[in-house]
View 1: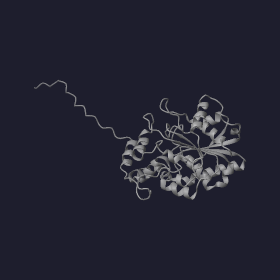
View 2: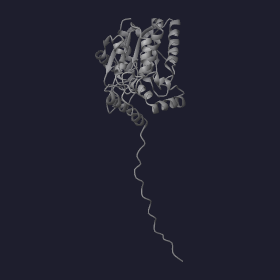
View 3: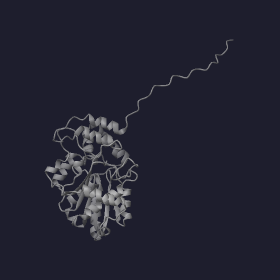
View 4: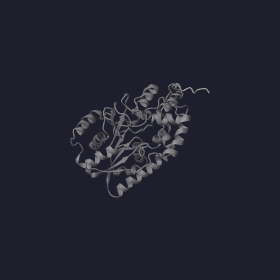
Length: 332
């Protein structure tokens, strides 16, 4: 009888390294880079070439560059000095979240907390952060009508898409400006979002948006198209933002390896040569007729979410307090 071979069986060879699947942002950038170059007419071809700041030739320029003043006031806020005027406590502060704001933990929390720590009354307007522009305008209008009913004055503070909805409400309902003491927009794509524009221009990414928004967020994929250049051009030309409302707008960009949005910032810089915060080209966030703060070291997340130490340059709460102080310093 043959004896069994008791020698240990050598283990199978280890498999070679498996290439990691590209992440969501990497796949998105791959699709965006495949877009053909655009002509100036956004309906003629995909892409955004020549469209950033398109409205500057058609609308009033910013009234004043407040960047130097911003840095001075921000330093005082970080030193815990009082910067808000006495009138600040007389107003209600209506905060508007941007795209996906209801899905991101901590979004605008630090902004709201800081204002309340200063004794100010705040309210987050219940817009659908994945909803259509005109639907959300109706929600903001109701909040302003409530304020008028109770004889309250308000300061509107909107981040990203929320800023566009604040501005659009006053453009469509200028009679409500009487209850608005000031408007603060943080990185709002007034002229449109270059990333939103390129997303809807890419057939594969447009299909992804149309599927993902309803299934994952119970939202409307067309809300992304509301921020495209074509949609914003149409809206702004029919409904320009009223002059005379004290408004301070924050326009930012950042191209740093410490930014979580660096891949998107680099994509816009390499493809178009524009300064971008990761979602919005800085030129598109400068609201016509506003006083503007221009920062070259802030990405789109830093104005609304507290970042990791050493990676973020600003704190959302201190930023918001500074911007409100600047807005209330403007004459009525």
